[in-house]
Image 1 (cartoon, rainbow, N blue to C red):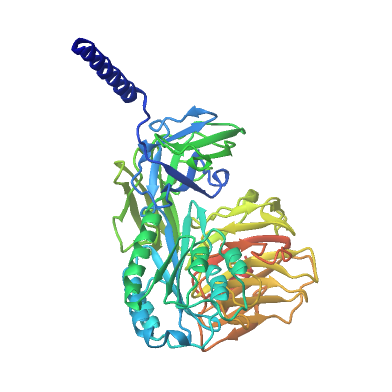
Image 2 (cartoon, helix red, strand yellow):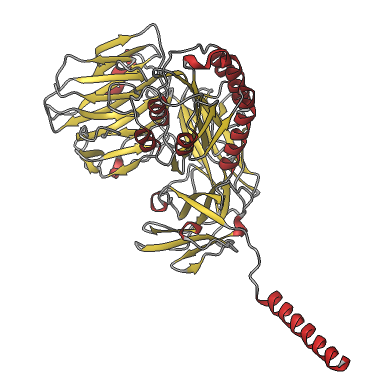
Length: 631
């Protein structure tokens, strides 16, 4: 009996051991799961000579940002074949080294019901802005009966805290839904190689929407995919509504003393999400006018769903090969950049560095051998890709400007020769002459994206030296070379249609109420209108309109100058209108600059031609405008 029992036990133990060995050998390891959120259109973010740019966010399965992945964690397939990370110089760039900005609207319920809690609410709000991220801008909005913009987007902490200190109690009504609608329309998320912008709304309320002037459905429709956090205080809130609105997170608190900690938690979550932004850049070996498939995925990802990879296509037309190196102001016609440039006395010029086939994300340092001849001024570009140089010397002087890519051990330089100035270039930030239909910036680095406009004959009869717009086309420049402050817009235009409102230049909507930014239009009465907005509900901050009507199909020079509080409109070198204001200020717009077409409405496109668009960050004098019009 004992003998049989021992044999049975030995058999059972053996089976358990075999089962254990089989399990160790065949079981799938417990791998992490990731989701990928694609941004932008890969086909629109390719760049010569052969750059592919893929922008995306990575989260875990719970939606929390994942910031620790490196190039080795990703794989890319082109036409189902692997792309070599080494041969393609594949790099991952994070938001701290790319032109990334984080817009944050702080929406505070100041209705009468908050009462004696307002002081603690303001202290919590100030603690939030004091914890501002390096690339973050806040806007402050309060609401009771209506939303009120107290401070537009800024990174000025002192201005933000003083604005919060000035918040007073509002009315005994709560327009929550309408305030959400207005606030989420204050920014746009966009993802382009020269500017990435993401935004968040942080909303606080101590109750529900009591005004009923807008609906929850309208608020959700306006929000769309924009990320919103909601914090509710007390027993009169509707947690389910806050959860619907707060797609990034919703929180209920019982005591106002908890608000500062909740804001800090939200800020930490926003920082984590921002750090989970990835920009993959590599140089494809594909050539010729051919369509190619592209797939990006994370290696060893337990998530295999449709949100675990990116699939897209791109065309390799015009792609070409280059040698490894660092170059200044490279272009398609001159891929290895420039080694010599002339500048007029007092001129400014943008320089841009580019590294081909570097194994690491570039980090640039600029220098000059004589800053009394040429001075260098950094831009807001976090990677130091671009700098502005100013000709400080006199005709005959020379200086050498150098740039080093510290990450890849590369260096380049160019010689600047100062010559006598031959035109108005001081303060020039962008110039578009549209030669051969090109929408590249011939002065700085604000290249435009052409959406249908065709090459046209210019005012001198030269073929393909202007750009024709057929009533459906536009050129988009993102970010806008001009924003708030003094500016001049100079251009030549020829109209092919009358009695129809047509947008020439804009970085705003054409609603004429509640708009920030600026624009130049031809009105339905065939006059020219020049406008600068600051979000006023009763119209533009400053607007001026000519009495002169343009009904012919001849070329005309049109210019707008703005000092910050006064505006002048010019036609063919003559001032035709003006307006000024002693209060208020221009509002900042996050929309792209457009030539020939509106953002909305969609029925005000230009039917005509544009040429020689010049943008200045100062208000030119009347004589300088006259000089531009004579060119």
